[in-house]
Image (cartoon, rainbow over all chains, first blue to last red; front, top):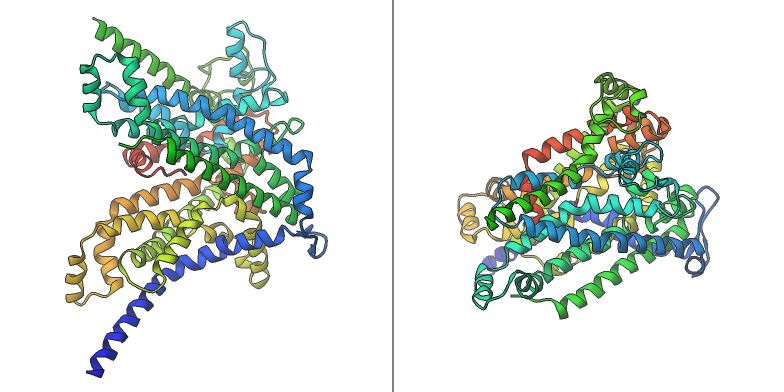
Length: 300
Length: 280
């Protein structure tokens, strides 16, 4: 009797051990490169440390104080918000429109989908180089199009007023296909019988959209909105390739500012404080959006 | 009649939109085949008067692109393989093994998805710098630095767990009766039955790493360790943004492999995004 109990316990232990052993590889990686770094970043944010010059010295909340009173930081926040506000609503409206057009049996549907999605799969560096060429101030394609419409040329990436709009146009173009696919998936989840019922009640197309499609699509819209806001607060590549934050800081977004501080000026403590603030901003946005999601979204 | 008119206007709108999406790629191809004098001709010409194929050879030799390609392929493949291995093991533990603390650990794993990559780059950089003091092969500017931080993905584990949970328990009982251990069951039965989820994860991991930029930019120093993306960025700096024919040629051969892969696995791509909201 005692023997069988100990055998049972041994089997249980073997099961536990297997569980931990199976988790070990992923846990080690996450511990070293995610969990520990979070704690390390928090700790570093209380130190002054220029990596090439000596050891870290504790300076309490000074980094946060410097950060929140720094004009550069607020300019970076402002630039990021400008980028997000410029790119997201336009991008979402256009992609919803395209998804509505594509959401029907259509000849050449796959060809259209391929075309819309092509920018999304290509690397941001490659398309940034292509768009630098399109925005060329003298012989660029964009100015050629403007001139065809009898509009004056713009110095796009060299003009502090136009560099951000140029990056917004690129952002809309690059992200469109992704949003179209999510919207199409959302549209296909709307049950056909709702449309039929509304049509029997004599609803016209605009009414169908306002009272059936749009409300039932709100979860999708919020999903896209959350992802788009988070992504725009994390954007870096196109800014590093195309403008290096310029001209005169007009395209220095938050992550670019972090990169400058930590990896060009080697202010590791200040950079860490910046990383913590970025995390809090993203977390806050996610929580706000989740809350709105809870109260305003229609589920079937 | 009205129906036909409607269909025509929809096609017109879509064709116009699709053209706008593809135009930059067409312009890239066109410029990549132009002579230096024609590149700067204005108004722009869409068809080069003479196709300068040498642009590709010159661009390929102007920077060590062969080395960049080898690096990118090695890194993306290693990360993909590593993610599949650690992911299958962890997902199996979460889905099919009972042990104390399992749910708390799963919550901890999920919480890591809330942490933006940009938040961990400074500490991860410092960790690798210190590891480099132990052994140069583990430090900055090595394959290790480019691969190790990414070989476990909480999102991937979540995705695989969902798939593993759908398998009936009877399968495991039968396998145990046949003398199959846990690892054997995972390898011989669970993995072959979860191929779609594994393929989705592999596809997005590979593409994401092939296109990744910020991390390789920070941890690479030497030309020997640069990936294609970083290499292209430095090529732009080196050419002083004037040799647009060469720059566009380089952009073409860096974009080309991904576009080919995309055209072949388009369906899995679209379904992966629509089903999970994955973003590279």
